[in-house]
Structures are given as structure tokens and as C-alpha cells.
Length: 64
Image 1 (spheres, rainbow, N blue to C red):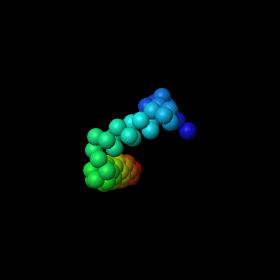
Image 2 (image 1 turned 45 degrees about the horizontal axis):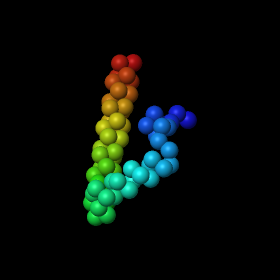
Image 3 (image 1 turned 90 degrees about the horizontal axis):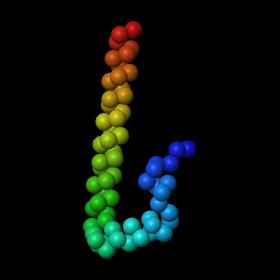
């Protein structure tokens, strides 16, 4: 399995420090909102990816 470059460079300590900084910057109440927004963005990206894939498959079957 190929690891993303960024996560391959960061160790456990660095990730914990980043999470603490995010918690301090945004606070406990803002983090769920941020995660919800991130989830919606990922969901929209996956929907768009699926639609593009379906359109490509439909266009190739129409040509045959």
C-alpha cells in the first residue's frame, strides 16, 4: 500500500502536536463543525468522481 508523502514524513509525536495546536486554535466547539464540513466536502468529491466515472463509461458504451 502506498502511503501519502505527508503522513510518511510525520511521526506520532508530530501528529499529536498538530492535533493539540488545532484544538487550541479552534476550540472544542468548532472542531465538530470543521469535521462536518470536511465530511461534506469529501462526500461531494466522491459523488462528483462517481458521476464522472459513470459518464465516461456511458460514453464508451455508446460508441461501441
